[in-house]
Image (cartoon, rainbow, N blue to C red):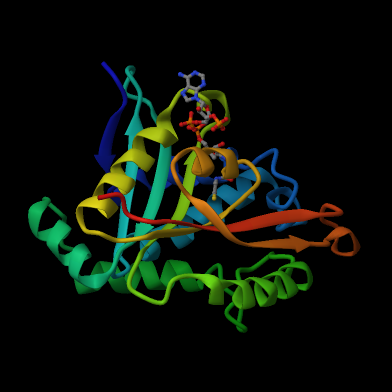
Length: 228
Ligand SMILES: CC(C)(COP(=O)(O)OP(=O)(O)OC[C@H]1O[C@@H](n2cnc3c(N)ncnc32)[C@H](O)[C@@H]1OP(=O)(O)O)[C@@H](O)C(=O)NCCC(=O)NCCS
């Protein structure tokens, strides 16, 4: 059986946190962003933040199961409101009670510090990065578009086509709805996006050595136009 794309539920929170954190274990930025945390600490805080993200408006989450049924890959898309509502109407999406939403918010807040930054984050390093990214984001299209906001595959399952399966889902959805897709590519994602018709609109080079990160780390902001 080929890879299967499945919806993500709250019960997947440990699996998804594990995929998100372990996928980037060799990424020099990701490994310096929480300098005092172990990998397990990072998985735990990711797990605590996840439910709020899962139920946030306009978010669409997918996971990929391989032929053994193991969940090996995950993606998060942020859709224009109208498209998100249409997809929800077409799919069986669990309704989340107000009580659960409140609980997720509490779990989220427990790993966020008073200044709204995640506890343990290397703020000195990330703040100037965010400032540069904010300027670069002005190059993104101004009309409604789809944002690919996360794409992760477990390291021992990379290069098998799992991310490609979800990218095809996203590009087909975008083409059908005549929408652009935008994203901020990490070095490991860039070649894949290029192969799927995304074009760079801005390159941001971060110099992170003085903050305990890599000498240089590059994000490429990319956009894919819909294909008729
Ligand atoms: C980027 C990432 C999600 C790609 O996931 P993946 O499941 O390995 O992706 P795919 O297998 O679909 O494609 C990866 C490469 O394998 C190739 N590939 C796909 N199927 C293959 C197969 N059966 N055999 C060999 N190679 C294959 C693809 O052509 C692609 O090559 P390219 O990088 O030269 O374009 C993964 O590397 C990752 O999790 N990185 C860390 C997190 C991250 O930075 N994410 C991007 C955020 S913008």
